Length: 392
Image (cartoon, rainbow, N blue to C red; front, side, top):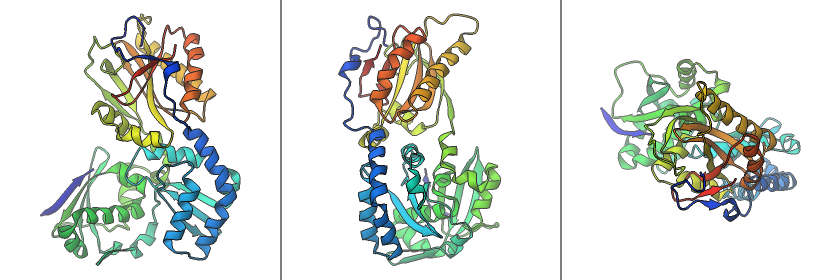
């Protein structure tokens, strides 16, 4: 039936890692993302009228794309954005293009838009749902033309994830000839139907069929209601980028009790809102961190000793310590620090974060560590080919 299927410490005398270095030797990025965003918005305020004029005059796509790149390149190494006009205001849509890590930097960028920009622009993270208008949506790819109304869907839900079976007679030649292009086309249509964020987060599996299933199907226009019902979320919540940032996944590990190098092998349990970065780290991959660092962003973690915490309420004290350090960083450095998770190990406590400006964070850490009685605290990037850096 199916044609194709696609799933989406260092205590200086004690730490075993010989590569641990001093904070003063740390290789900072030249221009942090915090600085880049500030410069980008200042330039956007001065130049955005040109882009609005291009939209109003229905200039060709290439000319508009060049202007978008010119306006956004001060902040981003790669610009993935779409623009349009709806009523009296213009839309700037910051697409993730399949990379979940981009959610965090695009949301940061959006949240710092000056009021002068917001007078003219609506800014969105992720492509938005077109609602009922999706039924009139058509995509032409080479010799292939597909309307949203041509597609029939069957959904199966498991643990908050949707498995989609898809049948479209007009797509059969494309599926057999260039299946990757067929997936690309379908993802674009799903983005228009349920929004890019919901598509990336909740669609776990897509199965192209060579003939329809013998049970009732739904259309792309109806899939939003299906998602709202099965996820117990409103349409607005499905499109809200900040809600996705606050979605944490808990995990447990089999700890190596003798691990004292800060490489996270001693972790018992933890949680994260950016699972792909964690997955990359343990698989010795660097795609996520490389992508972040291209924009002046650093993904990393702090680790510190837990050996002084000994009491019947040890677990509570460990969490209280992590929460206190995190709260101080969030309060004092809201434009430089973003908490993305934490973990408890046999030997160490861990605070995971995204650094919009790493220098600001590392300069603030010594006083915070001293305040909470830590004898030392160290930093490491989320990449196994990096080194640990002693901050205190």
